[in-house]
Amino acid sequence: MVKVLFVCLGNICRSPTAHAVFEHKVAQRNLQHAIAVDSAGTAAYHINKPPDKRSQREAQKRGYALGQLRARQVAETDFSNFDYILAMDNANLIDLRQNCPKEYRSKLELFLHYGGSSETEVPDPYYGGEEGFQHVLDLVESAADELLEEIITQRRLL
Ligand code: 4NP
Image 1 (cartoon, helix red, strand yellow):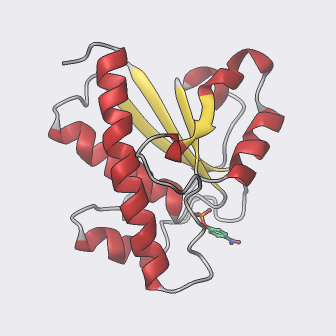
Image 2 (tube, rainbow, N blue to C red):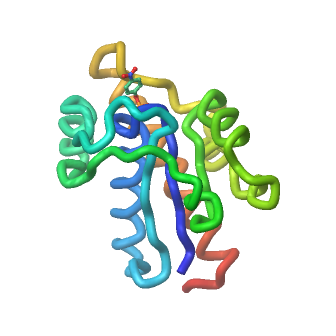
């Protein structure tokens, strides 16, 4: 099993969006048996809360259901447990690096390393309007496509 963890600050906007979009794409390729997906936040503010209503609404318009997800904080065991640990922005990456045992640091990278965007970070949409949430989805959909192809090739899954 290849295990993928998406990480943002609150685990209520960006990383649950990435979680649901990537899981949807994994299912479309019938790879649920081979790839496990989860998400978490570096902060504890929103533990056990469902994704932000605005994230849910914009995702729903594109056919992704976020409503069953609940926020959790990154745990020490995540660093050994997951194979890919993908940060939405540089602040998330720095936070992860500070908490990650050295032996696992190579698992950490920016999610937008994938997807061919000129942007390197998925911007935090929390304090903005709905266009910010749409932009998150645009970035996440492209990066998720390329990440999935990379994992399929790397692990010879198809
Ligand atoms: P996320 O967005 O990191 O994409 O889940 C945020 C959610 C909540 C807060 C900031 C960002 N907050 O400050 O409460």
